[in-house]
Each structure stands twice: as C-alpha cells, then as structure tokens.
Length: 549
Image (tube, rainbow, N blue to C red; front, side, top):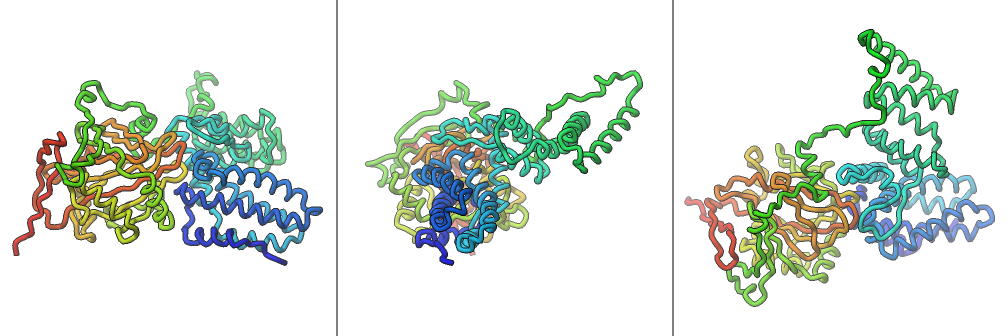
C-alpha cells in the first residue's frame, strides 16, 4: 500500500534524526515536534479519506489533532512556552500516537501503520515523557504551585489555554511513582481523584488511582491512611488480589505498632495526621534560598545597597570602538560587582545566532570535578551548542564586541556557548570557576581558570528563568538583548565563592542565551585590579608574562 510521506515530512524528520532524544531539554528542538505532529495529522487525514467508512474513531482523533496542531503551529514557540502544552506534546507523541497504532492495526491499515512506524524512531521516548513530567513537578515545587493550578493551566504570562485531563494527571502521578517519588505521587493521584469526583470522563478508574495512592502514602509512613485507602479500593474492586494482600499486611503492621505503644495511649494519640506530607530533603543545601530567589522572594537589595548602584554610559576604558557609541551600563549588584549592558545585540543578530546554533544543540553537560570529563546531570536541563568565529560573521562580530566591552581578550576564551532551556529548564547553583580541588579542570585547554563570565540574554521570559546568586541574595531577570557581566576570581587569583549562581527553572516562556567564559592563557603570572576612572568601577587587568626559560 502507498506510504503517505510528504517531502516536508521527510525534511522535518531529517532534522530530527540528527538530534539525540531528550527533546524535553530544549524548547527550540521541541518546536520541530510541533511541525512533525502536524504532518502526521495530514498523513492520517489522507488515510481516512481512503477508508473513512471503517475508521470513524480514527477520523475523530484526527479532527481533534488537526485543530490542536493548527493552533500550535501558528506560533510553535509561543505555544510551547506554556509548560503544560510542552508536557502534553511529549506525552501525545510517546503514549497516545502509539496507542492509535494499535487501534489502526485492527483495521488492516498497513499503509498508515508502515508510515507511522517509520516515523516513531524519531519520536520522544519514555525518558522524554518522564523528563517532561519531572519538569512540571520541579516548577510545582520551585514556584509553590499546587497540582490543581497546573492542571487548570493557570500560570502567569501564558498566551494559550492548556489543561491536564484526568489521564494526564494520572500519567504525572505514575511517572513519579515509577521514579520512587512518593511525595509527588500522592499529590498527583489526589488531583486525579479530585477531577474524577468532579465528574470528568476518563479511561483511568478510581481503583487504579487508589492502588498507587495507598502504597505511596504507606511509603511516606502514613500507615493509617494506607489502610483506609486500601479498604476503599477493595470496596470498589473486592477481587483486587494485591489490595487484599496489602490490607492484611497493613493490619499486621498496625497491630504490631499498637503493641509497642503504652497501654494508656488512646487511638487518637496513636494516629498520625492524614494527608500532610513534607517534601523530602535533597542534596542541595541552599534549596530553600535558591527557590525563594527564583520566586523573587528574599532578595537582599537593601536601601543602603541600592544607593550604591548606578547607571552610566560605558566606553570600555576609552576603547576607540565605544567612544562614539558607548553602551548603557547598569549596576545590578555592588559586591561582587555585577553589571548589565543594554542593546548588546540586535534582534537580527539574535535570530541569526539562534539559526546557526539550533542544528548543533545537544544536551548540556557539566564537567566532573574529579575526572574533568563532561557528563550530563539532572540539575542542568538545557541544550547547548558551541559556535566558532568561522561559523558565521555574526559570531566574530559578537566576540569583538564582548572584547571591547570587557577589556578582556577573547583569544583565550572558551567558544561562544549558546543555550536553550527546555520544559522547566534550569541549571542549579554552581561555580563557573574551578575550585582548589579541581585545579586540572582546564588543563586540557591549555588555559588558566575562568576569570569572568559574560552572559547574554537572547529572549525575554514570561515567568521564571532568573539568574540568582544564593550567597548574595541577588536575582537578575532576563531581558532580551542585554548582557550581564561579573568576575569569577578575586585579586589573588582565588575563586570568588560569592559568585555561585543558578539559572532558575523557566516557568513560562522560551529562554535563549549565550555565555562567553573568559580564561587567561596558561602563562598568567599575576592579576590586579585597576580603576577605570571613566567607567567608575574596577576592572580586572591581566598581565601575561611569559615564563623565563
């Protein structure tokens, strides 16, 4: 039978074939899925025209998807700026479309099945769906959103309406359960019950929900509630074998617990508060401070400190290129000194950088402090690409501009790194410089430590996505076309530990940026701060003195 594979569809999947899974780590790459899904709908529509009489259920599905993709493809990036839309896109392609394949197999639809089966190799994977679900949970925790708020899609700055169905919420809870995250399992399974009780239609049953929920609360130590939920499950499904075994086990544990208690304690004193569970403590010691800053809370910008912050025109210590057209410079923090420059890049330059970076985007990595080897990490959710000056004239032009602004050479800088954040994209607190126990991190580059960071924002972000400094209590919000600059090293050459910073999860929006990490050559022998009188703040001057033979 004929395979309905359009040239455009093959072109899209040609792009996707160059991309390793992990779609959830880059909204930029997820936009390709929007168009791929739209083309799949068109292919499905052609199949329906051939066997419309037999395929009424499939036709209904196609109409639903056609309406959705028509809206999403009109503004793919804006549509995916809503994290619920991003999650549902991944879930559809990983779960719902394969379910449709099973349906079509019943109707001897060999042509469409062959077409869909070929394309599935480029679809998001289970890892993507789990990653997208974890992203929504990360947003839930960081920005203190309850499941009902996320389910109704009531997020600040959103352009599109997006809601989670009962089955979507059940998928969230099941993802958490499979990862051993019983805290979020409980929150989302309770949301499923809430929506079922409200009369929402779904394929998910209360028995399924109670099966997960009862065991999750047991894992959280709430034996009394686990017992109550198990009894409720058995009342709905008396033949549920696992529930019957759990009931006997829970009753036995509860009896053993009672025997250990003093005889004068009442049942009420034995009971624990039901439905109140604390979020587990994790590996990040400054988690609370970090997340508070992401929400715009706890910023330590006191009136006294604010009086020390100024705006000025910056000409790069009288650099000839900036004398006629200096940059607007604004103090973001006094100590360590963090400044923001305005109108650093034009919209045309930003779009060109994004255009040449997108095909090269790959999962962002971190350097193992012990081995120096690059590896992926759960605390960095984004994709990045590295651009060289030979890639495009705009890269060389931007590099020269950075050099004029900072007064530091880019000859020994790392390549320009473009980053695009995914669903709930983030980079938890980290240092840009190598610490004392990481002395050989940059040895393979033939350079010294990272002297400074130049961070350029290439997009506005509707909600979230701030750059925060937990030790300072500082939060800096993305503004398209601006750049933030700070030094990572003290005068002594030691790292400035106050510059530990993080990229907060993107709540709503598509965040693009690029980094230029400036390093001295391996022959750097001394550093000192000099006053740049016209600029009004201290610049770091690096003296490169070749070692004597």
